[in-house]
Length: 443
View 1 (tube, rainbow, N blue to C red):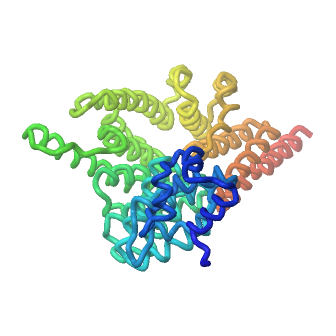
View 2: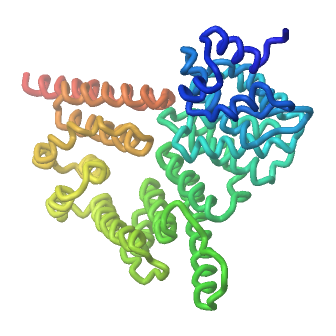
């Protein structure tokens, strides 16, 4: 007899001596349903949940007979979507990758079934099983011929979001791979895509690219805002645009990333203009409770960034005032602020030892940052610290900070910057020359 799902179930039933009644009692499956599953003509289809229940009763591991289950879903070119999707999800959950790889090609003999794979990927994504969703989005991308179809573009977007990490080279490759599809997304997803692109390019220190995406985000957020406002005032029917965050968040972030990108290019006065925009977004209509909370967050960021731009412009009179303000902020904002203070101290040659001592416990916790932006800020902070310590003649501390830079660069796979940090050791040579000259004069 050909090995089949039903022949295996019947074999186990006979082995254990179970009647339909007893098997129904143990599995929770109606005995009549069991009879129709095993003896019906044609037999009733079995669900993956029922198969799991039988496996447990028979003492088998999860995934038992999964290699035979596709016969319940695929028959003569026809697919049962209600059975196939739960089956493939269970294959993911129990690690039956072999079953997925055997089933998907058979599905894809009909291109229309790409929609099933996309629906499956979306279910996994929404459940937070991001890595597990990746192969199914890849199946969609590899097999969808229309690069403008919703399934194809959304799969590109989901992959972009999922694979972002701390590896600099991989993140840049990810940006290049996805960026050409950003304008094909629906507007609600396009807002978040532009924010992510601006954010990751900022972390990659690609300031002009970050500025470009920030400009696109500002324009799109403004366009969507005007459209939604007009729709509301005209009392037009239809649901409002659903976005991952309140619309004001994207509007504010467009201006924020524009300002910080300009800041990193040394364009401090230009950056101040954009800080002023997100400093007070209370005029923004369509605000719910979450939106109003975002407005308050932007006020905090704007105040901190205003201090930053003043310090970087050489206004050393507000250093202590800025430090007092930083003391009230979360550690990630402290890191950003200390970056500005250290850069200013190195540019204008003033002492910040007191500030470093004051924030010593916060500085010791900077290792907690594991995402791209936090790691980039931490690396830039250690770089400025190395310059500062060498400049103060504290050689051992300068070496420690330089080694810190090298380890962070290695963690982020930013090996192209290694020479920049190794060059910090040049401070030692310069210092030795100065000491030698002083000794000669003294002698």
